Image (cartoon, rainbow, N blue to C red; front, side):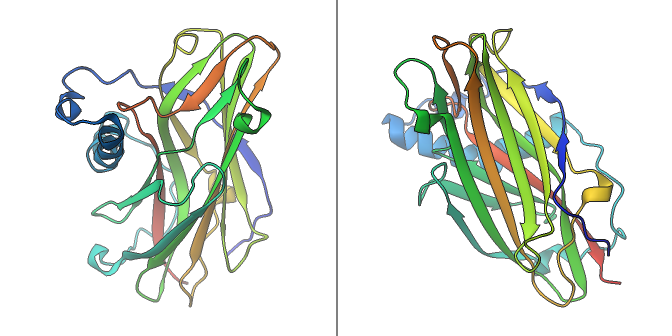
Length: 256
């Protein structure tokens, strides 16, 4: 296994339209607003995640041996989160039936810039610590992440997403991906739903250690910058209708 030092890679942002009335009808009968918002985030993780993958099929890097453990033997032992973008109790987790996608839902990962906002609102960080239990003789790696949320960015404002991945056993071996959304143009000027997909280049993929259960660390950061002091911008969940989610796709292989 080849180790890789920190490297940064960029990808483009693809668009996903706002949910239609039919797509959000299932939440219309729930009140009050906070309960509705909480329910929506959990529903997004369970229901919309599969639809997002189906509607936007991914061409993942050809990595691994193609040999994976029995999905029934893989489970999440623990998940913890730290950072000003994910206070305690604001992150939800879902593991797909095939154990190849971990979906995180964020209820407080919100950034703002412009008049009336503070400097602290411009950048938010959330570090996730995922402990998977799986049979010995296998290892896994992050090969792609899909992000979904809401952005409204006036002219001069840029929103940038950063994700750094590493395993606790080898903290110096990291890979970082990043992508940006530029404001002032449609649909971001007036606000819209975004979907962003980051592929980790094959040469930069980092595998969990063999002979031990690897704890995956995902350090997410959203930063807003502006060249216009009067411009406003936000990247967040959109009230009760759009949850900010991250789908982490993993590949499995037998240890060599």
